[in-house]
Image 1 (tube, rainbow, N blue to C red):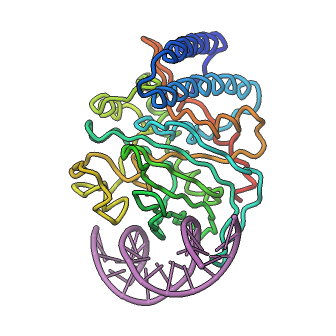
Image 2 (cartoon, rainbow, N blue to C red):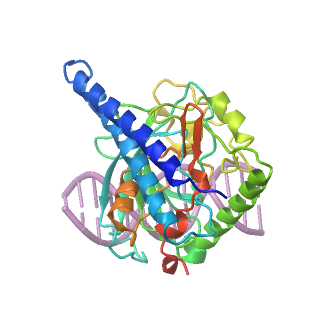
Image 3 (cartoon, chains in turn green, purple, red):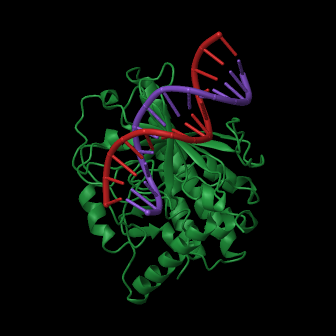
Length: 334
DNA sequence: TACATTTGACCCGA
DNA sequence: TCGGGTCAAATGTA
C-alpha cells in the first residue's frame, strides 16, 4: 500500500488551501446579501471546516508517515461517510473523562460529541456508510419543543463485551434532511473492528496488486451522485452493503416509530437508510481521541467526513492510510 | 429460537 | 418538579 509522497501531499494541501481561500472570499461577498443569511453562513462555515480538516488530515498523515506505520488499514477515516453531509460538529465535551459502566438508570457522564448529518432523498441510495459498529435501539422519546422524537441506541456488544458506547439520533426541526447524531462513550468492542479492518486490508491489497486504482470522487461540499457511487462501489472496497439490506421500508419506521412526524416526503423504496443501525447509510462515526495531540483531536471533533477527494485528475483515497491505530488507544480495547 | 424493536414505566439530574 | 435517559416486558421478524 502506498502512501502519499511529500510532494503529493504538498500539492494536495496547496489545492485545498486555494479552495479554502476561495471559500473565504465567497464568505466575504455573501456578507453583503441579507437573504438566507444564516443559511449562507452555515454553509460557508461547513465549507471552510471541510477544507481545514482535510488540510489537517493531510498534515497529520505526514506526521504519521514519519512515525509508526500501522498494519491496520484506516477504518476510522475510510468509514467516514461520503454520502452524507455533516453540517458541522457542534461540540466535544470532556473527551478525557472516564467511561462509566452504567449499571443503573443513573444518567451517564460519558464523553459526548455530536454531528449534524444531512441526507438527500431525491437521489436515492448514496452508498453504504457502515461505521463498523452494531447499534441496537433501546428507546425513543418525544423531546419537549422538538418536532421529532429522539431515538436512543447502544452498542450491540454492550452485554457481551461491556461496550458502553451509545448514540442518539434526532431529526432537525427546521430541515428534515438533517439529523443530529450524538455519540456518547467509547467503543470497547474492538474485536469486530479489527476484523472489519483486516477484511479491508485483504480486499484493498488485492485491488492494488491488480493495479486497479481505488478511486472515488466525492467533492468537498458537494454530494456524490448516486450513479457515481454505484459505479465506484465496484472498485472501492471500503463501501459495502449490508447482507440484509433494508428494502421497501418506510424510513420513518426504521428510524422513528411515529409516522406522523415525517413531513410530506415519501421515503419508501430504498431512498436511504437509517443512520442508526449497523446498516446505516449515513451515520457518522466519531472516535474519541485520547493521546494524539490537539490537531487530531480537533479534526475528530470537527469532522470532514469526506473519505476521498477529487481534484480533476487527482484522486485521493483516504482509505489508503491508516489512522485507526493512532486514533484509538489499544489499551482501551483489550 | 434468537435477536431486534417498541413502548410504558422508572429513575436521575437540573 | 419536570424533562430526558434507561430499563425491561411485550411484540415483531427472520
